[in-house]
Structures are given as structure tokens and as C-alpha cells.
Image (cartoon, rainbow, N blue to C red):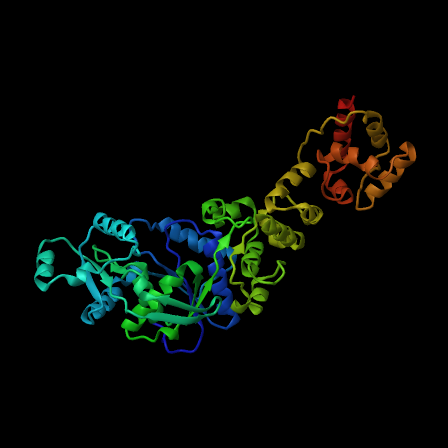
Length: 455
């Protein structure tokens, strides 16, 4: 087990394997990884998997695959909380002995009724600590009934405050919060408790997570103190939550923004990592590798306002990444037979890597040109002046000059019908690069077909 007293920065990414990673928790993973690398520290992967009803092994596998896809290699782990139940049980016993953990027998229905009653009376819907008023005899009878209790942590009556590395000074008034349940009736610990025990034992120095955990952080600082630790030994940083491009809550759209979905759509990991790293900062959304991102990463540059996740911005950044990507980096993801010349010709016109397959069909497969009304004579003239092979990057210019001399056409009037006949598209990669890839035989065939179809 690491020495908690060491000075080295240690952070953790601790997802629950209950679903797919989405851009919200991927942003937290990126921030933790970059912070660790920026300060020469360690990035620990921990799986908060004590909820046996919702956690799934397949989600554990997906989390690891998604992190590797982003390039976020962890230094330690994965550490699974389900393997550490004895550690949590020992810590819970310490809290019981200190009088800070107390048994409760209310059902969920009873608790809900209490919450409604408090709201009707204009009170905050927090737990009323009724179990603390039970006599020893009442507790003995409850234990003897065979109905196992859940265990709540008695919060202190004051407040806890810290200097957040993103949000600034933060204070949580503990009397305004329900005493949290730390141990379920089945004896398993909840995240609130297990996370504190793990952070202390693993020597975590900084906890970087979402702003929705601010109140939870106040509670966990109180638990840390009850376990004999100094709460300020772990620095806290809470990143404002992501919202949509119009400021709407992003949570409703997370199905389409899972890393699985973005990966399937053709988003590049380098684009997503750079986007998430700089989202909510004044830094330009420009392509950068992880080492560059880490060197300039500063929690203090993250805005305290919600960050807008705009798919159009991500797509624009993805486009820039693709436009600069070398062939060797893309070879395994291109259609079989695709060459470096092909990649260099088409990459400047791609938003997503998956679009390369369409252009491979254009240069190496079969297409049906659209109807080109009134262009039959022009296409036949172009066909008659087609240069012999071999072709290279100068062929298009030579051919265009010959066509222009014969027809008087220039620029768009000349190239638009040719592009439509040869590629089926109104726009696309430079024809000077495409012509040698398409080859003379396909050009002849397509021009003949287009001229015959043109009225």
C-alpha cells in the first residue's frame, strides 16, 4: 500500500461500472490524468463497484478500453472496492466505537413519509435522527427481531470549509445535510464511505471531480476527521458541470455522448482529449497531444461557470486533427488497399475518419453519376481530350487546358460537371490528386456513362 505521507501528487479516477463512460466523466478522467502528469505524479484507476445490483463486469472492461483509447494509461490499478470489504468493515467498526456510526431500522417507505411531513412543515427534508433517540432496550429488541439495520454517520454540528482549486472558498453547513448512510442493511459500504477510506489508504493528495460533489465533499471531510485524518491533507478541485451548446442540461443527451458512441461515429481520441482538456478555459481549442496538454494544464484556468459542450466545436477540432494525421497513424483504420497517396488526397475533406470509406469507393469502386442536363456535348469533348497514362499531379491541369481551348469553359463551369461525373459529388478533394487515383479506365467509363445519360 502506498505511503500516505509521501509528497508526490497522487490522483484517482473512480468511476462506478454501472454504465458507459460519457463525456462528463471522461472530462474528469482527462483532468486527473493531465494534473498527475503535469506534476510528475501518479494516476490511479479505482472502480467504485460496491453496488452489486447495478455494477457489471462488461462495464469494467469498457471503462478500461475507453481510457486506453483516449491514451489515459493508469499507473496503478484497477483497484476494485469489492476486493476491499474487510478494510471498510474495520474502518466502520472504528466509527462505531467512537459513537459516530449508529444503526437505523426505518424502511424506505417510512423515510419517504418523514420527508413529505417535513416538507409540509416547511422544514428541510433531512433525516430527523430518530434512531439516535432509541433506548438501549429498543435497540436490543430491534437487533433481536432479525431485521438488519443500515448505519448512518452522525455529522458534526458545525461547518467545514476548504479552498477549492477551481471554485475558490467553499463551505458546507453540516446541520443542513442528512446524516449519510454509510453501511447498507446487507453490510456493504456505500460510495460516500468507501471512497474516503480508499483515498486515505491510497495516499491520494488531490480529489478532482464534478461540482455536483461539493456537498458530498463536505460530508466526506467530516468522515475523514472522524477516522483521525486531517481533512486538508487532501486538496479538492470541483469542475463545473457540462451543459449543452444552448445551456441545457447535458445529462439528457449522454446516451449519444458516450465514448462508445463518439468512437463509433469516427471522433478521434486526440480531438476529444484536447477538447475536454481545454473546455471551460481561455485556451484555444486546437489540436495538441497529451504531453503538450499536460505541460500547460492548470486547474486555476478552468472557469467557475458551466462549460458548454458543443458537438460542432468538437467536430471542427476533429477535422483539424484528421487534416494533420499522417498515413501511418491511420493505415489500420482505412479501407483495405488504401494508399498514402489516397490518404493525403482526401484527409483535408474529412470531418470523420469513417468518411474515408466513401472516397475510397469513389476512387477504387463504382459510382453512378447524377444526371447532368445539357452537358452531354461538353463531357464528350472532355473525353476526347483525355491525356494518356501515366498520370500524376499535373494531369488535371493539362487536361483542363485542352478542354478549355476546345470549349471556352474555365473554372467552375469546367470543373463542376467533370467533378459530378467522376465523383458523384459537387465538392470534394482536389481533382489534381483524385485523377491519378481514379485512373484513366474509370474516368473513361464514368464520362461515357455520364455523357450518355445527359439529355
